[in-house]
Image (cartoon, rainbow, N blue to C red; front, side):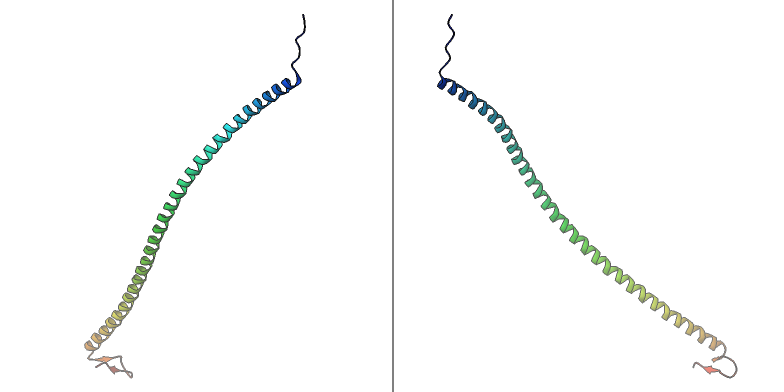
Length: 128
């Protein structure tokens, strides 16, 4: 039996190169598939983020509008409370005036009952 003859060195180099390139292609394909999946996920996430950004902008605009409405309500309420305070002040002044009138009428009635003379003795005075 004769031993098989080894292939020539050029053929071995070519086979080794082909095997190496096939191995690189296999590894590259695997990494390429992973990178393609990641790129797809990034693009899908970017679309979702853009949608969320648009929704957030719309909600922010609605919130700004609602805040303006609440500010207007607060301003109106502040004005009404001021008016209530003014009315209360007016009512207190009116009450004081009525008390003065009531006291004046009481004194006048007492004078009328006592023939128009207030006080006794030296410091007597007439109201009318």
